[in-house]
Image (cartoon, rainbow, N blue to C red; front, side, top):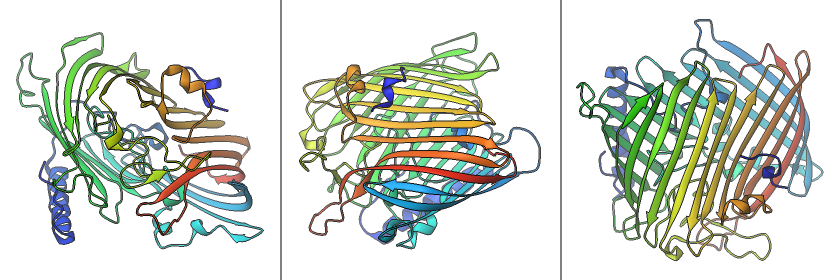
Length: 464
């Protein structure tokens, strides 16, 4: 059953050789290092860039020694049709500028151990769920871990990028952001240990130091390139985007930001999005609010947010097969026809406790290309609930209440403290499994369902 039954709601990236790519990465790392060293505090922060404002990774806002917690547990795990016994361990540490969460799980069943838990060296890297550094004074942010909400700018190219859509094949990515009064750099890589999908965005606020109506004018440019499998083989980048944004009105803590973004995928198509954001970073010292309404006009062979939630499993480099008849799910980029869509987005963040983030792309055309994204979290000292869902292949809003399709990623987590250090935990996962077809040119994936009830002991107090 769908959860909606009860919830309403820049430089040039090169492809000539591996050595050239590594040289680019070293140069990029040097630039980031310089920016980290000499950055000046910025006027505000883009809370919608990746996990920069994720309440599940909240830092300590008071001056105190870092808090650490250890957790060990055991239970059961249902993966597909097979039950396993499971043992898990977790370490968490939270400070004023850093947060670390390491998680490891081992499963075994009637037919032996569950291989994907420990069948390759990369599984050691997958122990990292989060390792982040963030300085509110200098505007610096660096995060290591699987990506699930990475966005560049308005999201016309990169939106809700997810590197854990296929859980057993998830990659540990990087997000970085450095900011001054006039310059902001944002970048990501889907994998910290190899060269795959990478992207960067440079934003300039040229009149920030002037007292004029144009002091909030922001110009931006983004590039995206997949070094793992090129989309546009005769072009050095796979996606380009430029944008302009300005604060047109401000009153009572609310700011109104109209924007226009234009993006293209070389040798394919292009799109334009224009709309406005309504923001309040501190609503009555209680919450952060964000509203967005935008119109998207796309040519054929272009899809808004193509580098998004299902890119690692269903794109030009991978393919999801339907459960019913093993046909390809969704549409290839060359199959997409001209159309337009309406984007609506609401985000409410009650600091460190509640997050409600809803985004819906209503596509108006002959193909079912509407998309939906939800991030919901509620934290207390007694219980925690977290829901993350991405869906594609939809028609209108009513299709949200239909059965879950083949383009769906859902993760549900529930924790309840029974007494003292004893916690009961439930994890339900709607993910993807690699079929391991050696004869196929690209990986094939199919839906995989998981369910894991576990009892854990946590010491000392909970660390969010």
